[in-house]
Length: 348
Image 1 (cartoon, rainbow, N blue to C red):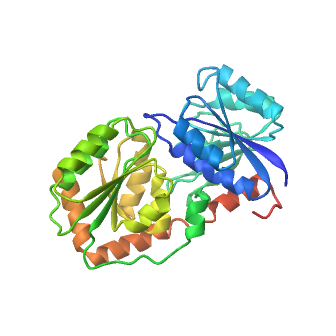
Image 2 (cartoon, rainbow, N blue to C red; image 1 turned 135 degrees about the vertical axis):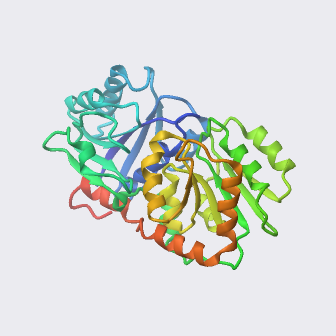
């Protein structure tokens, strides 16, 4: 199946890179059916651009302000110029008017959504890959709009699918802590987590910190790690997240789309709610006892984080049980199901 798929998505210190990374997962699946992905973004990022180009995608940048009507018209024009019948739009700053312009241009539209923010939905397909996704979020939609809801549609990049469901080894004492607070982390929560880890009393604890390409606090994080009483690693703009998740015994993560990668890998730990749009997912994960969740009241004292993490590290059975519950949420077939929704009859 030959064809171009156009992605309209953004990244920034405030937004992070989660939207781009899940679009990349779908782009890889599109390539597997002999398609070509194009990314149109509002803000230049050499690191992300290099990553996308290394995956065989073309990258373009807007000349208009992101999210407005001019953006929509520019996106539609590029779709027409590149003969992209399908356009994928992913971001909280795109609404119903934006969708209308894309549809009026004659393009088919896949709209990625996490909590029903757009008001009215005119897209051909709406994808919400979150565990709390419900049809009631999209009552104001067109009769033709198809809904893909829930973790059966989680988009995982090729590196995770190639790794597969390798059984996780659970040692009696968890010692390796992976810290990943998203691709941006505008509030430098990472530094606060490192400070909290100083209160964890576990012998031979080792900490690995992932810093994303939109994180502007790398120097302060490095200083904090240099002062810390435990051995540490700092990985910047890591392209081997699957290996890092396999390395960790427990994780401290933000409540964004990284959750589904962690769940697939069976790596559980503490989720920090650092943005309001993470609350719904985090509440369900807490109820299912697949992760410990802090920050639902917009705060996570260092002592609470240290106590929760230490408890998990010292209890092998707890880690095993939570890991099993998390891994049941994501089967790794999500990208294939989405491709089949866009291209019925095509085997991805």
